[in-house]
Image 1 (cartoon, rainbow, N blue to C red):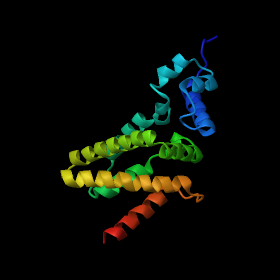
Image 2 (cartoon, rainbow, N blue to C red):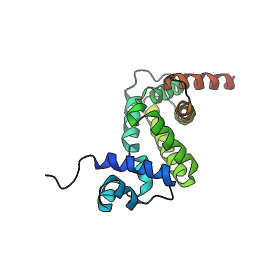
Image 3 (cartoon, rainbow, N blue to C red):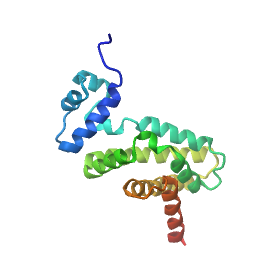
Length: 186
């Protein structure tokens, strides 16, 4: 019989979200999260350096997957469209149910420290996407603008998708946001 239960990382993520919902981010501790997940505090810290990082557990893998997808995209002649479509075509449901993602987003938005961390990760992703565009032939200014505007446009569409009762997929929300940007830019 193993000394530990399998799936500790997933249990820690679920326990953290439950406690953050019940007590707020500040009201939950790493010790409480570990207890709820039925692991030791030491196990918690093997998975996460702090309780905030539980909310960003998938960030590195997501970052790598999105950069890879843009790098492998067949057509980047329209850099803004390429960035937005790359982001929209990702399997966001793989990060969990829409409702869970919505709760995570609300928690992050309500906490300045978490929001700062989230925005830093988004900036890092946009910088990496810009680098891919440059490597694929876009001039540096176009690459930077396309990556950063595209990432922000996608963030807006993603947040609307999270809050919508509409069963439309994320690509539809992203397409609408891209059309609105085109109207504004005229």
